Amino acid sequence: MSELKAWLDARGITEVECLIPDMNGVLRGKVLPAAKLAQSERDGSLRLPSSVFAVTVTGEYAGASDDEESYSDPDMVLRPDPATLCVAPGLKTPTAFVFADAHHPGGAPWASSPRHVLKAIIELYRIRGWRPVVAPELEFYLTAVNPDPDLPLTPPAGRSGRAETSPQPYGLEAVNEYEAIIDAIYEFADVASLNLDTMIHESGTAQLEINFVHGDPVRLADQVLVFKRIVRQVALDRGVYATFMAKPMELQPGSAMHLHISVVDEADGRNLFAGAEGADSAMFRHFIGGLQAYLPRVVPLFAPNVNSFRRMRPSHSAPINVQWGHDNRSCGLRAPISDSANRRIENRLPGADANPYLAMAASLICGWLGVEEAIEPTAPATGNAYHHPRTLPKTLEDALERFAACTPVRNLLGEPFFRAFTAIKEAELEAFQGVISSWERDHLLLKV
Image (cartoon, rainbow, N blue to C red; front, side, top):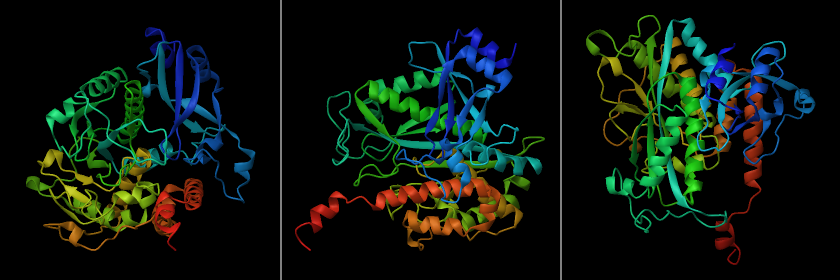
């Protein structure tokens, strides 16, 4: 009996959700009987059209005009990853979910799959005998139900029956206002085997942050997507929305997905970012140097939407450059206070709206290039890093132009992924630019 079938039988699972993360980190896939999933493991019969990696956030298909494959839309073979099998919480029918990797019929991985892209970057480290470790911190907002997209979002009423009207950073009573939602999130997360750490109230009204326990990047990216799904489901069940938009409300801070990153020796688990007597190692410096050199050129991988750039504004709790500093949260790259075993760099640039596979891949690519090229970082910033010049693009359009010209990263990502990703982002940008906003109607309609 296969590992997958034994797991399903032991828990009495009758249905399985087969999950495929698309370019935007939206979960797509199939729901099928458990017996069918076990059979597909034997005969490779579980398939999905490859256009799943060409879907924009608006639900349209994007494809290069000269791309014959986008028109033929061949099937991919899906191979479920047994290590990701988990019980799906909150459903009446005994259901499990499993992430699947997409392959060509001949067995080669599907190059434009974000999950494969992250695995391929991790393989670069493995060849060197290294293992990257990450720990995401994910922020999100609870809001009142808002079915009209023309109306601004507002905080929801809490347990007291009142909505927050002012910031409550780290407030325990503020967290208790949403106790029922938070308890249900932890309960569902436990059923789904998510490895969560602490939850706090962040700076925004009804803004929360969850910390994940550090581990393997692919597993953590899987968990981030499952967590997002759980939070949305729990919130809806209790009559509120949960959003992971980077900047959902104009007068509130944005939501980030900070990534704590270290690299360890695969043989003995030693943290390679710390040298003799606990000092920062050359690898640590070069990793930071790579982040500084390349992150401003690959911004669409961690700020993928037009809304992402509304978050990255001076003094809005989001970095505008890649200055680095010790325990300095105004920097895009922060070195937290730590002993040698926990030496790490925190990439504070990604938004909560980023695809976690691609945000992690971007960070690991840039750091890897820094180590390979022995790039020295700038001197650590002290004081307010917002006083340093902005080095990040201000718009998605600018970011895509920089991304297209970043040959070293483009080569590592592979041309199939690059073409598919940029086609989607360009289609989304064109769709957004065709929309007339309420601001334009308000201020221009009867004045110009």
